[in-house]
Length: 201
Image (cartoon, rainbow, N blue to C red; front, side):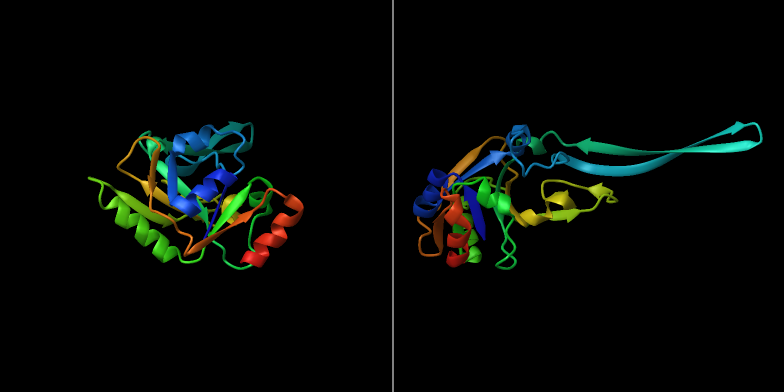
């Protein structure tokens, strides 16, 4: 599992286990964030066709209009999320992650990482937390969207999300050092970054 970001944040994740979850609304407002899907925040998407028929002399004219009906749960926009990326094989990394970030934390044992998170959160009262792999849908899809679906054009992100359903603002906690199950790669020297990352993997 990979977590990209600013060097100071990734170093804090490695050494202290700092996990900062930002609300979905925060991600949506960040217009410079290339990872954003404009459909994020929808709870439901329906695609419909409306056919209008009229007569013009001996002709019957049919006009088909395609429409999208979008339903938004505003409460979902304020739920904190934390995004990471799966590595399905050694060549499957979107280059923009390397180009637009300063560092990456490579978590070699995701199950243990998740176990430590749950152990810390269990001490909190009324915590509703889940970890979900993002699903990607095509242009013909109609149905539930929620907090773990994005359009197929974002599939290269291979995203895993932590979602905090019981909070309505940014949320931060620490699970302690993860240096025994993870390592960091400096991406600030772009000419060396990709090679260093592949060596670490």
